[in-house]
Image (tube, rainbow, N blue to C red; front, top):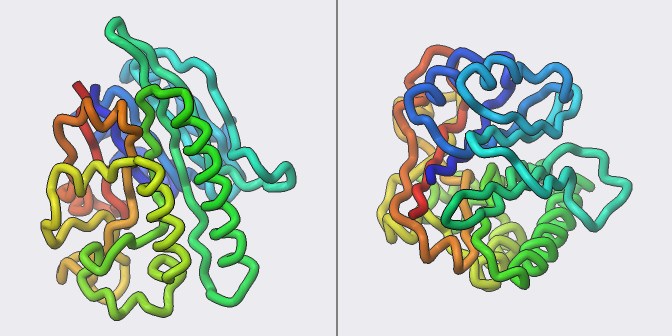
Length: 260
């Protein structure tokens, strides 16, 4: 089973790119983030024509997550528990069953948190605390699950071309990185690092400004975190760098894993 994540940075602006990549890569499950549209405006028919079921948790202009799947979704959860007043569309979860077993997958668009010293950074940390609680609860089920998405966290200096350039950014704050480690310390596995070890230059985001892509001035903020049961099934993990060469690309590229 191939499971992928991709922050498309507006599904309407990136529809042709998304359809081209999905048609070529053929993921079994694809988590999308930053849709920037409400549910009814998501171009579901275009993906259904490729054989996908479509789940959307959208929001006008901002945020929004989706899960496309070749298998029918079950046990769907929209929104992250822990704050009934949080109206931002950042979390979508579902279970997908095969003859040999099932896997739970969540599409995550974690808050950016900038600028520092504002409620946005406080919201980021609160949201991460809620995600930690959800992961802890899911681990009790002792089943394969994958938390996939744009985490807006640079986990270590190895995950940035120029880490010193990010010291004033919410993505690289000690608090953000510590919260990310709490997820790993629960027993989750960072799929890319599990396969590629401490290899440098593994980036998933390049800013549109200052020739970042041309200079490979990137960061790794799109992650797939696996429960122990899912980690036992991990065969491969790859960053689809070539997608960044498309015309009018997203500033993120897909990351895809294969489970046995």
